[in-house]
Length: 463
Image (tube, rainbow, N blue to C red):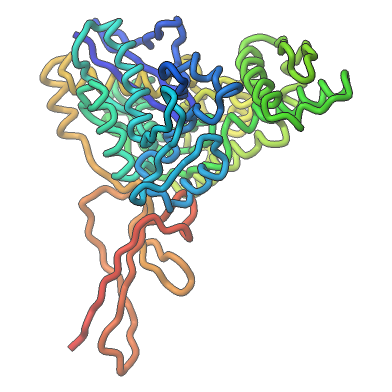
């Protein structure tokens, strides 16, 4: 039997398998090694993947994208509200939870983010079954380091309903390090690793301490406002400007034209990861005009120089949180489709000149491969000894800062990455006549201690 690793990202999903001592990515029915996380609904059926992605142009109001962003969140969540504001699919509030309203089989129907996610996992299961035989497949799911318990439960439940036997959830940073067997071949090794992920709509940097075959998070930073899509949109705007220069017609005034340009900009970006030049060809882009042009990697890189610095800025923040210098980092693991861009790899290498940047595994496949290796251990593909060692060395830790609310903001008491269970104490000063006080303990939101994700109030009476 085979053991699978599944990484469902915001923009694409990847499935890897461990079998006969080897780990590799399993291609889908189209021969692609990654599958777009897009679900489209029509009058006749629903589609997932590349076919659904094409519907963004003509059927945007019934095509769900980036569902991972609101998985496991409430409707009132700040991230959900940001998603609703940008979504072309109608998102409604149903008992405090977001639901999509689409026209499917000639009538309006509602689907929750959990159901959309389950549909994508079913597509991945079909790919797994084509490689490993019919029936339920063992799998480890890779999820973001900062996923909350609610989001982790939602992802696990969706994969379980799709037909996977979920062995465990693994953090994306740990999976990326495991893909390269860091610290696994020699347990006496002790060094620090930086894992940098540049996904479609977000990026993050995590510093890991590798020791005795274990990974300990020393510091991590997340930014959900920047990702590889920012590079794509720069290229999209360049193509729109080029079209206007050639034909004196502005695609920015037509939503469908810009959707076409976005798809072609993404194709060009992928081509430029391996070739010095890419061709853009769009039939009937605007007013029946066909658009053909070439884009060089040098031109694309020059446009991206205005934003690529955000990658190293986040890395610097993660190093500061981990109390590390650049020289402390021995190896750098890059993951996420955006790290396939030569410009991104180059700027990271220049920022960390004394570190070895690992790029031999494609960025959009690294995390799934690491998850598959974890699945192999848990499913006992390598023997009982490895399985026992793995169980003994697994520890839970906090994904976000937890602190006490004060008049000046959140005072962090337990930092993200703290191993749990954990005990600490906090000293509070009371007034001479004070007989009671209220303490509010909060969990920090995404990248900002002022954004509270969850809180609980405790009342104390002093006799």
